[in-house]
Structures are given as C-alpha cells and as structure tokens.
Amino acid sequence: MLKKILEATELLNCADVSGEKVVHWLRDAGATAEHKILKDESGSTDFIKVTIPGHQGQLSGGTAPTLGVIGRLGGIGCRPNRLGLVSDGDGAVVAIAAAAFLAHMRNHGDILPGDVLVRTHISPNSPIIPHEPAAFVDLPIDRETLIRAEIDSTMNGILSIDSTRANRIAKQTGFGITGTIKEGVILRPTNGVLDIYERTAGQTPFVVPIFTQDITPPGNGLHHINSLLQPATVTSVPVIGVALLSPIVTGGASTGVVKETELSAAGHFVAEVAKEFTAGTLDLYHHDEFELFVNLYGSMKQLQEQR
Image 1 (tube, rainbow, N blue to C red):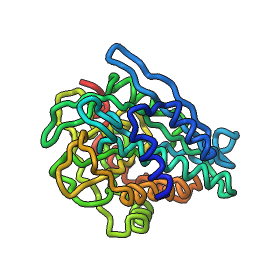
Image 2 (cartoon, helix red, strand yellow):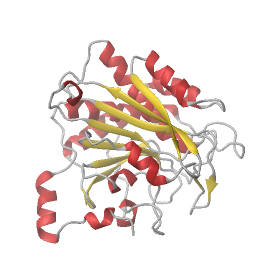
Image 3 (cartoon, helix red, strand yellow):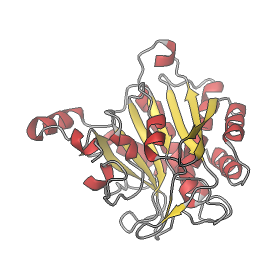
C-alpha cells in the first residue's frame, strides 16, 4: 500500500496532471478505470471512476455486496496561489492508491467476493475560500454536480475519505473514522469496523466527533467540519467517514504536509473493509439500533434535504 501511496502522490503532485494520466496509471496497475469531464457554469474537473469486479459481484450477476469508496476533496492543487499537492488532495491520493492496491490483489489471484467502486476527481487549479479556523479548498464545479456523480445506485455501503485537518475538534496524527451515517441518523461504529481500525491504524480507535450540522447538505449556511459526510445527504445506504487528521490546525491549501505512512494506514483500512464487507462478514451499522431509533423518534431523512 505504501508503494501505491508514494506513486499516487508523485502522480498528483504535478501541474500537468489530468484524468487521462491518472486513468493510464490505474490501468497499468490492472484496474478498470475511466474518466470524464464534469462541467457546469462554474468550471470543470476530471472525474475518475474505477471498478474492481468481484467474483460474485453485481457486475457478474451475483449478489455479493458492493462497496463504494469516495475520495472527497475540493482539489489536489490551488494554482497559481499555491504550487504543488495541497493537504486537501489526500482524499484523492488514498482513494486511487487503494484502487490500485485492490486491482493488484485481484490480478494476482486474491479476488474479492463483491465489487468495489472507487470515485474521485482531479483538479490542480481549485480556488481557496475562507473558513474557520483555516481556509478551505473549494470545488471548481457545483457541489451537487459532484456528489451526484460520486454515488452509484449499486453501492450497498460507502467509505468517504477526506482530509480533515482544518478544525480544532479532531486533532491527532494518522486517521480517524466517524460513526455511521444512515438517512440522517448518526450511529455508533460496529465492533467489526473498530477491529479493522485497530489493526490498520495500530492504535485504539479514534472516532471523529460529528455534529448534526455536519451531516446536512452543503450550502445551507451551517458550519460543516468539511465535505467528509456530504455523500450521506444523497443516499440511503450507510456512510462512514475516513478522516485524514493532524494534531495541529492545517488549512486545506497547505503544501508540504503529506505524511505518506499515515495515508498508507488509511488505505489499508479501506482495503480491509472492502475484503470483509463484500464477503458479507462486516456490518457497517447496527441494523436493529437503526430500526429502533426510527420506531422511537421517526425518520431523520429531513436532515438530508436542502433547505
């Protein structure tokens, strides 16, 4: 995994990087990959889609669960204001490195039961916008356009990966995970997810504090920790945030802050979840607790709606 992280970092740390170059690298790693230009009146970005088919996956007519992996970010670069790969780009780094890792496994005989669908985008020239306590990297296109492209109807569960360093709440090295978000309800992590975290991070679980406003749609005027859980606003399947952290406040537009070994640990977490979830041996949420919550307090789907 570390090798894939190093290669992905080198690939994305260039002013002339493009979706075509990323797809070429992924195909060399044995992945099925494609890219397209997402464009609206605001601008454009190169959108990347990677598929790692399972031997009993939906793509081959099987019934094994499909995992979605989304690398969330505003951009991998903020040129001309900043030169080089910015902190905000780490979601894309981990997503494409994990995709290459899983594709390598598959091509050498370790084929997962279910499909894994990886989605991210490549934007080396994104704008910087104000945010407290540190500036964010903004998308070059409308947020709704990107979120809708990231979600596939065949996904049965989602890992959303995002650099989460521009805050004063979740402060430590490495990566953390959120509770599971499903239809506006914040649920505690399952023991299976915590077990995977412990063995890949090499430490006791760090669960990122998430507030109700963090799981509401963007653009509603409420403060969000970042875009980590935005996919949960447009799907009914369980979503877990994989947050790349820092012990100090680090703006998304900061350069020179990549810690490759920490990104590698997050990549291993993604790969291990993919193995167990697609095999049907890992629950991403407590089904009985979710049903009881809804029976007691009603649906929270209104939190997914734009106001």
